[in-house]
Structure formats: structure tokens, C-alpha cells
Amino acid sequence: MCEDGLLNPTAVVTMCVKYMSEDDVADMMDCNELSDRFMEEEY
Image (cartoon, rainbow, N blue to C red; front, side, top):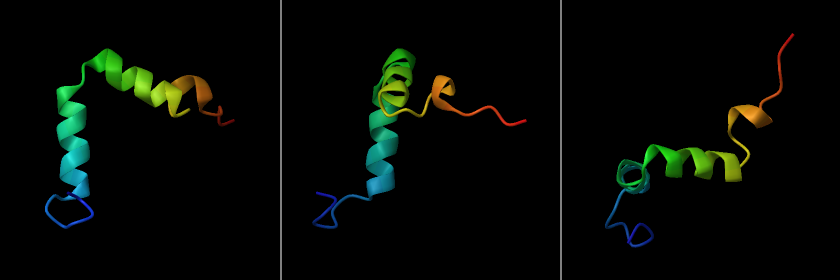
């Protein structure tokens, strides 16, 4: 539906994240290496 212009991709992501639990979001972030444990420490 995004490709057909029926839905805004940003709105779809927002809807998905609102549907997910906090644990689901944290797991998704970790699986995509975006969680704190993957961030480099800045000195």
C-alpha cells in the first residue's frame, strides 16, 4: 500500500511501533544493532 501511494511510510512505521510492546521494540532495536550495546562510547 505504501508503494501504491495509499499509505505514508512514516505513518505505517508509527502504527507498527505503537502496536508493539516496549519489549518488542527493544528486541527489534537490538536485532538491528541499534541498541545501546552496539553504540560506540565517545571519549
